[in-house]
Length: 478
Picture 1: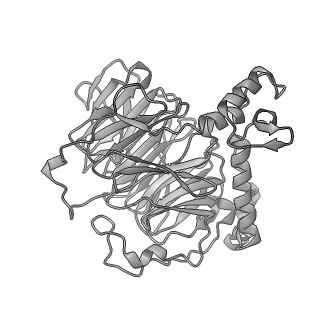
Picture 2: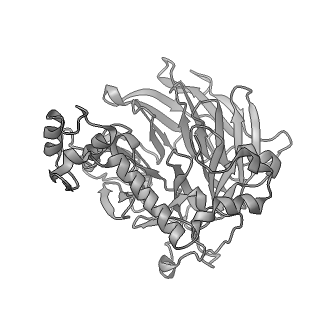
Picture 3: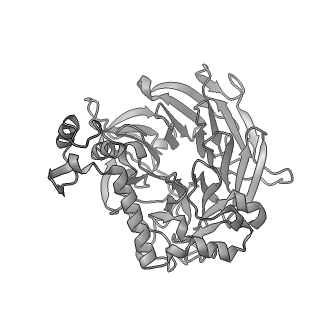
């Protein structure tokens, strides 16, 4: 359930009152330090071992604890539980990062734009610019379960989302029509409206004659709704049971590049836009207020992706200012101050980030932490929390336009790993929810697997070919 500390009755209050309450602990100094300390404590609770399993001698702990020492302690029942707790397991697994490899999963002739594991890790979905989506069966040696040829594609597959029951897949493009495919059917070759029906869901309003594209699409936890972010600055919610658009919010001043539900309740929605703001929307309040529950400021340029921690409180975002930021929505405010670079000519799609801007900071930065080292250029690069089950979400990881994957420690901010193989931007990557395995997908067409300890096979050499014979700068990227 959401932990936003506002009763539903507060929805009837004016904007300034509710915002002041939610951001009271987000002031500079003591409030910010407290929130950062809370993140550190929550991470420690999720990934620290029992003191009797990690002690060098009674009363003294040594971290990280030796895996051998912990196994001996478990067998001798030092903790009194007779088994590892979830935190004990996280402590062991989180030490073994998926950095060995890579090994080729697939190699396509077009750019990979999206790639994600299903919630249980049994399936993996990859979407490509060449009207292609593939669903792989992870547990059957990455056999192709579904080979989908997309319908009415404009420019590229911008996003995909697999339903919680893994029976349906939706895919989006630069069009107001999202298509849904039966991912659980026995048909392997799914050609739109030839071998299978790809049913279209119209995200346009009845009186909306304008064309727009959809950058981001996500299923709700119960699988009954879809939320999307559009190129006409809006957030849309689609009711699948009623087969109609249930909510359309004029949310931002520019493209909404990313949206997601904050938690299992579905009440809160996070959005990120090219206007540089993250916004929090409470659907229980929106009808009466018509405004976001709050705004998070700190990025100097547009936001490419948002990932929720799943607790209705914390989220991370990637920005075109070449940073990833950690947020607590209790620090959000009602007013927005857009700083920007002051350079209207700069375009992340084909220009490098200005050197003078790398040390600039937003004067009203509300983020808890900032992570730097990766590159967010050319395309909408994505970032994520590491899995709760195996790491206690103690890391964040991100693709990068310099063709690498970066892994950072959530609390210290240190870069703990960098995965190099690709020859083109890594737009998306996905960490298996259970195992120390990570998949990266790139514009070079490669889908590759990183894991620990490896599979005994020699790693794949880097690709020797470039798509189209050369890299072309100056084309339209997204």
